Length: 214
Image 1 (tube, rainbow, N blue to C red):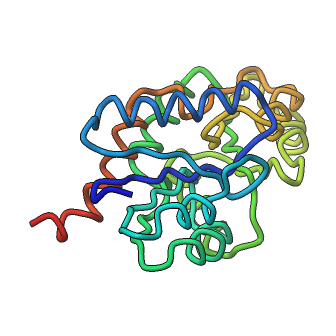
Image 2: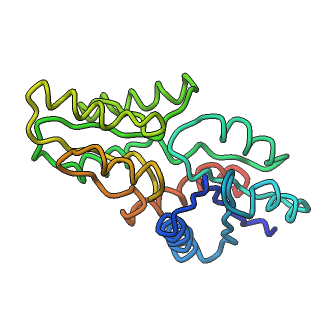
């Protein structure tokens, strides 16, 4: 790997649409930072796995940017173990930009807002999600537990007529599809649809690599 290598590490999905969206995001990062060698790896489902990519480039350093939305097992264990001596940046989320994107996508035409996130047993991850929900004045539902439809149904019983689900998900996949079964009035698009997310990936690289480049 060259001195300017950014390894973007996504979760991985079987969704063809989600796969294409992540590739498009990484291509956009490469286009806005043509001086970098931008590579894509995964922690689950898809190949190549991050450990394999890092072994291929073990002769030199790389900066790993997790394309994940909160700190959790994949960041603390899978990516950390594969990184070796390479630098791992914080994940993309939480970040004020992502909260801004969610707020803009959700708009104001609703009686209740539900923040739907993938879900994790990691207490730090759950605290981060709770903080994002607090900023959006939203209820939290975890897609991994299929909670979204229950939260939406409970809000209906409480009198909410217009409910929006804010998808705290980077790309399409099983969890995103489940949100459309919750019978909310609207589901926001995956975060990667916003072109500003590519800039966020590049900034993660810049902030972490800046001391070494001085």
